[in-house]
Length: 126
Image 1: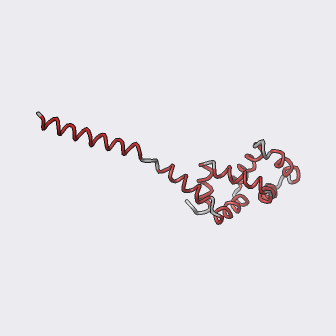
Image 2 (image 1 turned 90 degrees about the vertical axis):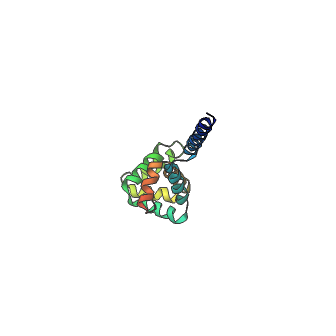
């Protein structure tokens, strides 16, 4: 009887240990997102992202819309749009020439996981 109780104790301990290990492991998507954010901060990637902001219409439009809707940048964006109502590339160039707007745009991309993934794929860093 003692042997059976001892074996059951060992089985319970091993099962408990495995469940604790399974709970501690972090999902790979969290690791992947953190890696992409770290790569995003490198100067080379930042340069490539700026190029994508000019070339990729979807990324450009999402970023312009974000900056138009953001209360901190709305006034500057209204000014840029008045100067260039139809030329989105000129608006994006205005954003890139303005450090405050560019920082907001880069933060928007970096903190938006889906957009960050698309941008990193576009620059070949996935």
